[in-house]
Length: 146
Image (cartoon, rainbow, N blue to C red; front, top):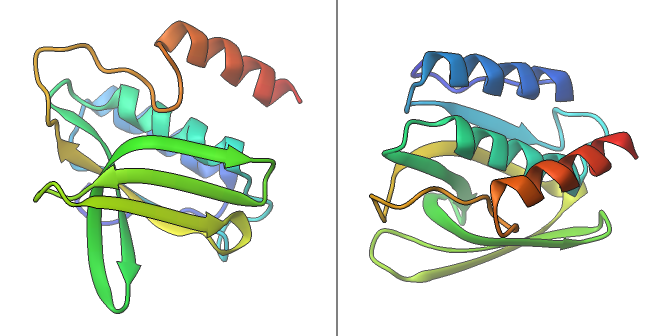
């Protein structure tokens, strides 16, 4: 699917990521917008990013595209952090290597998840914000139960 997936419910994102992982595609684009998705929270966003990241072909990783001052900015994710559900912080860099720091309130979040060609090939992918996939899976289970 070359067009952006317009998502309106949390379950739609989960289903879209599952579908994409079955297709093993690298051209997925998923819009996450607090204006469109009801009750969005930071835990959901981190889970969606990591689920997409894991589902992509080995040559690709999850990236983010935002609009800033009327321009599209696409960046690789290096780190994700959040405290409670008030703010989410993304640290990354653009193709040129310039660092990006993006902080946003969950209630105003409007990002597009995209597949980017991996920067480092030959190494196993790791989840953003976790040491490995086992830790991610454990924390995800606990987060989804709460």
